[in-house]
Length: 402
Image (cartoon, rainbow, N blue to C red; front, side, top):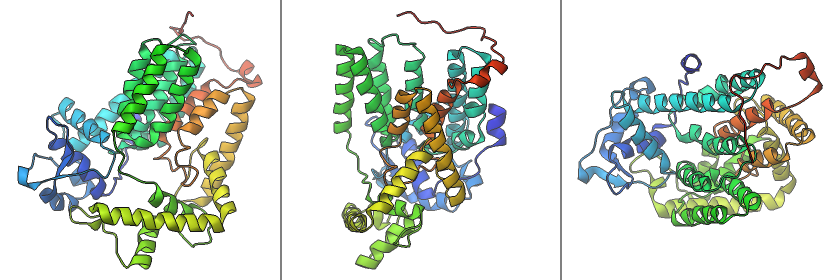
């Protein structure tokens, strides 16, 4: 797996305006855990190539140069800080990437230990552990990879073979809180899992765990709104508005209507002005609502295609043809899973993307957590072809007692 990560190492990066806040925030993290960035050092960082950014050292800025930041989900700041602390001899971005590679290797080995046959282990290793698409995001210095955490929690539950969670559900809830901080779009799948465990176990522990997560979510304010993403998502497929799947579709429409050009450059871009951002969201909300009333079938078509793709490769930005093939393959996967009686797994898979697929295509970065669940479902597919396959048992089969 380490060799695979090296072979398929992702050579791309997010825009510096989105990467810099996390790494500068980690370098300036204090005991109050507040997110502050060194605004003066940004201009030097943005002028570097990605290869140079990989070796860039983020240092603590002078108190007068630090600005509060709250645009993105804050949890990845703590991941960066953890990587810098554990792998202190590496530059911060490289430390984060190797932390992700290490976590990927350990998590895959753990899942393999939960499988009871060599055939299942081989299928999972090829479908997930060594999958180039997966490794592409494991070696990407952004929070997308960590969307795998809810999927790992579900596998941990299934691997118990029906044994009750008991007090362990509190640890599950705490992990979900951490996941929510890293990527708030994972909330629905976490709530879905906890709600199922409450129904299945019917214990005070389960009810309190669900209540704790809900209280935590309400206490942590989410500064983002979906209107930009929803409006831009119209451009994923042929549309009456002539939009393309790009942030510029939203920015240019706002400029047409208001005369104001959105600037996301740190630290002085008007996107960081709360009033401008609120007005931007409001304008796009009105535009999207008006568009939906005029073209409801178009939006319904998009939602169906998006959902089907989330059971496959996802939406491929560079090729609409491959995206349609992905939707067709996803439809077949849904039929296969239903035929195999994997309805519960289908619900969990859908919960991982339902928060956005109704209006935005499941590009692989957004649906990364589904890849592990799809591989987990694949190893449990049963069929008549299995009589020609070897049935060698693993050295340490997992056993559970009720």
